[in-house]
Length: 497
Image 1: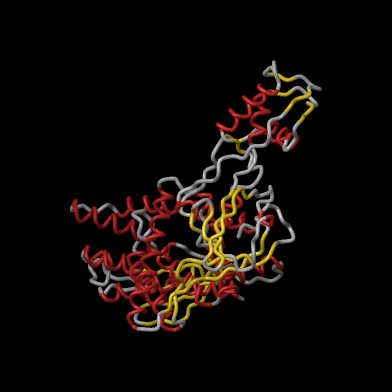
Image 2: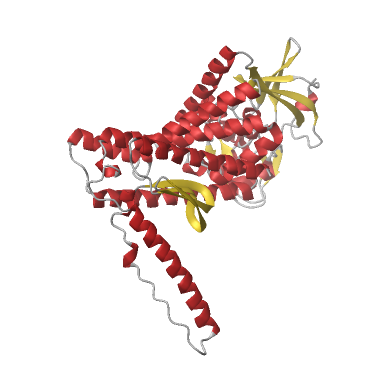
């Protein structure tokens, strides 16, 4: 049910976007021949006609469009003639089915032809988009993005008024109790219920994501080895085993150095808030080194079962764990837990209590200023994320789309309530505005780019050239959407969402 609510909210965003184009076009006296709710894929229904505009509802709700008479100037339904064979005696079942289908197609074609003739305007008509000034065209093209921004502002202000609060973009995380599946040594320390997490490795912890990030990326056996630890273990092996060679024969008894931890995990703030991809520190182990690692871990003496390479052994000994330093707050007292060792499952070993933080919006001043602050912080984060994607610091494989949004949005509504679902919709609306305004052909920003070039050069690109460029980029966008859908499905199957 919550996923259905999220689908309706996302559909509303697209509808609002197209309403923006529609209103701007009518304000500039441009005729709109069609207004589509959804995309024309699958069944479609004509709702009504108002002021020369036919309103359609399409079964595929993710999308929408407005169409101008200009769009049909070169497309004449009269060119597509449908011949329906006459009914004859002794026609077969399949011939009858084909005849009925063609009759239906012919009726649809006749309705389309009637609609087409009603939509036609002379080439010098002031109601054509192409006959408007560049300023008017810019307004019409940009209106969808403007409407998405306005809609996001309205949603945030509505939440501030109705719920009297807005998220503070932070969480307080407390220890509840030890977990049955303990995979770290944290329970060896004096930890208590309601101890609050303050920092890990001197990085302030403000969300569950940050806590989980440090724990998972500091676990035992991540299949990476740090070069300085490899050099240390190589020297220790040579020191403990006098005369050892680079190639160690089978059935050789070796003294192993004491297990030494890797350097603690250190990352910048952008990584722990998900704005930059985390890149492993060290060299990835080969399969034979991983197998050797599992055999020698925590052993003082090791007898080789086959011929091995000394360097491989040094790498195997160097893939251990990254110790955590956790700072807790118990009342007014700070408690520091040093050398926390996380097992290979990547679990800390405690059950948590999580409290979302909110800021109150009970006065008119609070509503306005805190809504603006919320919009500013979320928009800044989205712009920064886009920059990280452009510069390659976030991979395309980390991008997600509608499927993931519906899943995550539904989960958020179920666990945190409608407030967070509406605010997520506001963020998506801002994101839709930003992405749609990028100067990429086939997007609104691409149309703006062409109009600006026309304004500067005084030359208008030919219709054919514009369509070719738009078609190429439209195909690229479709391929990107397919890749993003693949990421979504993979994340769902692997339970990463």
